[in-house]
Image 1 (cartoon, rainbow, N blue to C red):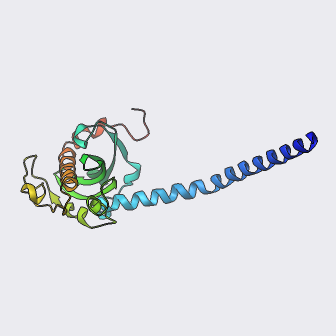
Image 2 (cartoon, rainbow, N blue to C red):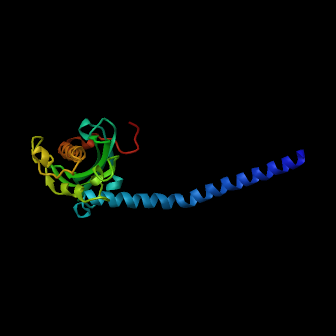
Image 3 (cartoon, rainbow, N blue to C red):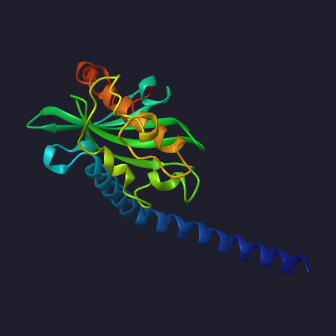
Length: 209
């Protein structure tokens, strides 16, 4: 009986080793493909907030880390710089709306350095399905209303939902969510106006903070 148990134990060990080896091989073979697909998805997202015709550099390759309360919290946020003929013309930056109805809303906002929003997308949220989730491009096109909108300073009253005297639609039964996003996009655009002066001081992505 002891010999049988040992034989079974050896068999299980061999199968475990083979399974582990096979997993490692599959992972090795697919790793590059997965990374390539992720890069393509990121490029597509960047082009949604900064139109491709506006820049001629590799935005993904010009990634910087920004930490500023104007972006909704003091966590590090990634910024992707757009250049045209070598000159910085715009950027896509991660931003946070900290005051969503169901918690923080993560955004990607594209803007130039004169207060013009080029585009914006919600990357992550936990808003109520059927109500606040209309900020998601997969649910509605509400988030596209920010494209090509100008922010005329911090006192620009147009940058609010209609209920608060602004120009952006709120959702029936859900005003908190769009209010939070409008505020965050506005603050991000204002922050971007200050960016050119500090570009040379920003650490690149992957550098220890």
